[in-house]
Length: 240
Image (cartoon, rainbow, N blue to C red; front, side):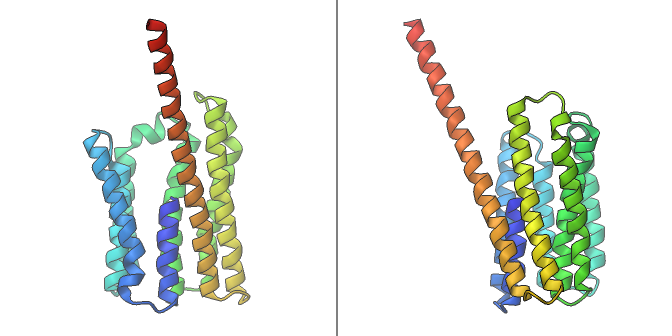
């Protein structure tokens, strides 16, 4: 989620700065490449790669549409993205609607869909294809969805307090980033901020979230590795 926020915000920011088409599309290319790597890793590990494939397909969809700029861009996007969403939800029906609570599944699905809608609305605003205030609609709905998830994490069954705390922290961080994007977009619509400044702040907000999320993941992985090595050492010592 953080990665695509950075990629799309950066791409739109480069567009407003009148960089070359290659530079504008470069963040989307990087996002697509990383999605492809994750897909390959999932396939090699013989785990379900449908979410990574959906992210890859969506990245490539944006890349092709922004590159070619067809007349029916929004219709093509709506149809193709709807197909990607339906196929992904069918492929993950057990994960989405069996393992977690139903409200969490629907919240996650809405969060993914609305995030992509925000990107296409940003593009439409940048290209002057729609009124700027329409950007606030998907962001506002997503803020409500994320707030609902944050408030109800405590009621999730079958996970311990540590996992609940970690999940809540990640959601709150994402909520704060969205709130920053909402406020800066509101200031842009009110002609207080320039579009370039708005997008730059979006890039910074998502980048901070990406760095925090990545560093947290690395820290947890190191802690798990260290704990395993300690347990192994204790077992070997006791065996001797």
